[in-house]
Each structure stands twice: as structure tokens, then as C-alpha cells.
Amino acid sequence: MQLDTAKSAFIAIDVQNDFCPGGALAVPRGDEVVPIINSLSEKFCLCVATQDWHPCGHVSFASSHAGAQPFADGLWPDHCIQGSRGADFHPRLMQEPYRLIVRKGFRAELDSYSAFFENDGLTPTGLDGYLRGLGVSIVVLAGLALDYCVYYSAKDAAKLGYSVFLVRDAARSVGAPPGSEERAMADLLSRGVAIVDSSEVIN
Ligand code: VGL
Ligand code: ZN
Image 1 (cartoon, rainbow, N blue to C red):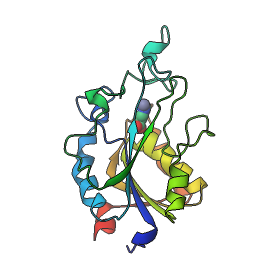
Image 2 (cartoon, protein in one colour):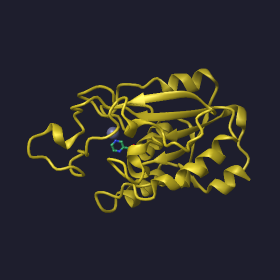
Image 3 (cartoon, helix red, strand yellow):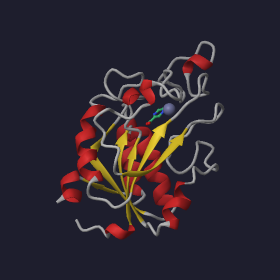
């Protein structure tokens, strides 16, 4: 696979402690993506990382709603609290290659899965403007979680007109509710997102 590196950006989604085993919103085998993402980031001139970055009492926390349970209705355990260890990038993520870190979900009343728009579907993160300003038309996505933030980021990137590549072996799913990964992957395929293996990108 030959990508025009001058027009490509690698985007690593939410490779944070809370999404790895032992974290507050642990993605099964989430830490396995770290070495693959490190190999990928070396291959790109432009790398962007996103960081889930919630204030205490965030609207997406089940604990913020009386009687609510996490992992249902878009509600989660408290996770990625601004400045906490859980919000830090995984200690083995090589941070040097990343030129921009997009923090998202920092508004108490609005969640943001996608790297491009918050969950109202309207409020931009600024990433689209940043990438366009640098002449990027191809985005390569990986990270956590495949069925949430990676999925919504890939979907928005496709809607915005980028050529989108999702590196399947460099992403892992929360897996809740059941079938979330299958639904996400089917939707991305229908939107023209290319699902690739890291070996095809690194070659
Ligand atoms: C994520 C649920 C809540 C993710 C973030 O990074 O996929 N999922 N916050
Ligand atoms: Zn979150």
C-alpha cells in the first residue's frame, strides 16, 4: 500500500491508561495496540493524537445520573478525568512523533467521541481545519476504542471527504453493548472506509 505521505495524517485515538487493562474503562487487550501504533507513527510526517479529557461530574459518567448504570445509554464509569493518571497516555506510547494533541470531552455537559465533532454533531474540535490547513486529504486511524471513538472519528472523516484507512490490528473494542464492533465495522465499510492491516501501511 502506497500512501502519499505529504497528504496523509496518522491519528492515534485515545491511547490512554483508562482504556487499557487495569484502567477505569478498560478495553480488553487495549494495551496491545501500543507497539503497533508506535511502529505506525514512525512512518508518517504528520501524527495527531486525541486524548479523552473529562471534568469531574461529566455528563457521560453514570455516577452523574441518579440510579444510572455504566455501559448503558451512552453512560460510562468515571474515566479520563483531566490531569489524572488514567487520562495520561499509555506509558509506552511514543509521544515524540505527535505534533498535535486534540483534547475532547472537556465540556461538562457534552461528550465527544469523534476527533472531529463533539456528540452534538455540530461543535468542531478544530481538527478538520488543522488538517485542511496542512493539505491533508488522507487519514489513517487507529486506537481505542474501535466501537466508539475510533468509529465516530472514522465516520466523520469519511463524511468530511477524507480518504479514510482504519488499521484494524491497531484498534480494540469496548464490546458493549454486544455487537457494537460488528455494527461499527459494517457501517464504516458501507461508508467507504478502507479496513487495512498495519503490515500493509508499514511495509
Ligand atoms: C471512549 C467511551 C467513552 C473511547 C471515550 O475513547 O472510545 N469511549 N469515552
Ligand atoms: Zn470518555
